[in-house]
Image 1 (cartoon, helix red, strand yellow):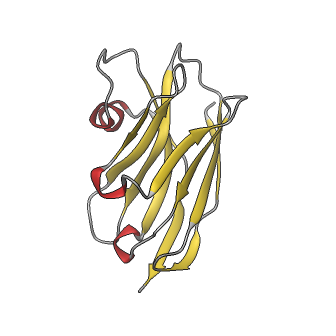
Image 2: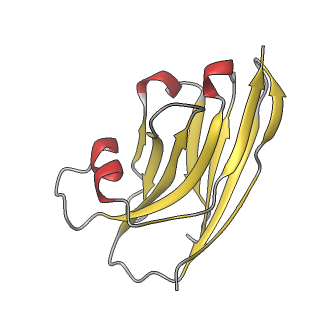
Length: 129
């Protein structure tokens, strides 16, 4: 059974920082990407960032480039999303998710969104102006 332990969300003022953590377990992919998608209030979900386990390649949504940084711990069980320079438009529920990379030879953030198979319960992030 796939299991996620997510933490780190909360309320922060614009310009502030938060770090999301995600410990994922119970899946047996040869290789996978782990990352986050978010769902803002009354909007569609959007993929934010991911990192590929095997080589550490990172991918970001354009609007978060230069502000967010995804990483994976040495033991490869826990991923982090460091969010700096937060803006009110970053307000959303953030979901940690995993996707196997075997279905797509040219991995991308779009592929991450397409091949998501498991995700956690989400953690809310609220950025006040």
